[in-house]
Amino acid sequence: MAGPSRLVVWLIGIAIALNYVDRGAVSVAAPLVQDEFGLNATGYGTIVSAFYWTYVPALLLAGWLADRISVPWLMAAGVAIWGLATALMGVAGSVAGLILLRLLMGLGEGVAFPGGSKLIAAVPEARRARANVALSGGIALGPLVGTLAGGALIAAFGWRAMFIIFGLVTLVWVLPWLA
Image (tube, rainbow, N blue to C red; front, side):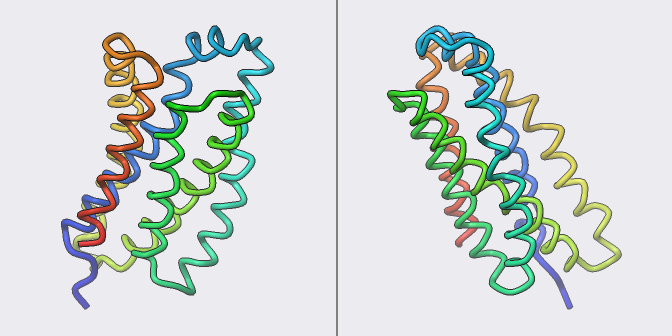
């Protein structure tokens, strides 16, 4: 069995990087979000933690689904959900809206590791260690790129534009994935 192509493996790594870029964007924008919505640390913490309220159960669900349905379609759906939620955070007009979108992000991002790991496991043993570099590299590069790019985007265009741009970049990932 040939297993996933190198392109698929690298797209998995990119998805994991985007996972961390989008997840961490709220931290990069923290002071501006807090100021705009008049949030104290508890209010802001509620927005940030909402992601994990759905992310952890979504990991379990996605792991179960990855053993039962098409993993490529599961990955596409998850990335599309979290990319859309990230982009919409840039137009959210309320704390409730931000919380709802963080819940959706957690739901979508929950597919990345179970789906990616399932596909990496299908890589022939002789290439599997290198395939894991894509996954591990995404974990390391995502926060690096997200923090640097997020700061630059906020400085140039504001926090809302950062979310829209990050979300749209994530949605673009779906195109080569489906191809």
